[in-house]
Image (tube, rainbow, N blue to C red; front, side):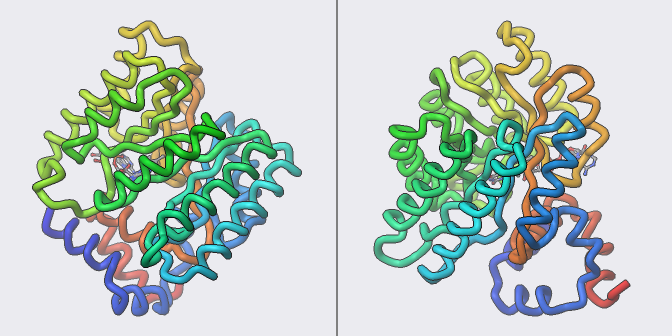
Length: 310
Ligand code: FDA
């Protein structure tokens, strides 16, 4: 737990970020979790996954953007990506995931308005391309703002997906609000370092909350997106889907690129819809640190790679 907190604190420390980002981190460490740096890499990896029977959500890496020009650059990157996916005939199986802090939410003053405008541009482009957007969820200070932007976007783009995090005490209630017809909701455990006042600290409590949220979403009329690598929760989701009489394709499983690929294939072979979350771009630092915090066993492997270019 302490190691997890330390890694997550480092993920937001600028000095450590500069140190790690400039270290000769061997390519294979980053490549294990990230599709590549360019739009070409993102499209190429999407094609490979779609050919394996998987669906995809692409994330242009970036977060906590502190200047408007950069927020615009990230927005444009999404527009280019959507254009390329449509050109390659991949939008039936590929959507995009957007972090609102990457497109302006963290800007001082009118950040929320800027993020809404940028997210709207991306939703319009996704709609034209025949696909949709899911709004990633970041730390708890952004939850209300993100859900209010989601409500705005859904007026014009009802397929816009939400994300809820079971480690937050509020989330079961949010699930009730979101479990209505047409509502796409990704349920994950949550990846940020959150205080006890708002979040369960014990892994078992997070899992129990996950199951309660899963019940609400599976019982409701929306489209649950079960985002976890946890074998126990996957088995429970499968059992709850049957219990609530859900046909395959009225919910989906989601996993991160590079994690449990054999399990992804097993679920596809069983007739399930499985979406792989595929990050790409140069701003991999925060994303990689959150993945390491989830599996501290990888930290030694990572630290070794910092001093080796092999
Ligand atoms: P956890 O990390 O607790 O792992 C549970 C168990 O799963 C392990 O004990 C092990 O048995 C098994 N397992 C996990 N990784 C494995 C591996 N590599 N190989 C073998 N077994 C493994 N978070 C957030 O805050 N906001 C967001 O918007 C998103 N978005 C998102 C999208 C998608 C598609 C996913 C899958 C996840 C997210 N997350 C997220 C991240 C999420 O909150 C969470 O941090 C990670 O998914 C890790 O939690 P797990 O549920 O996988 O379980």
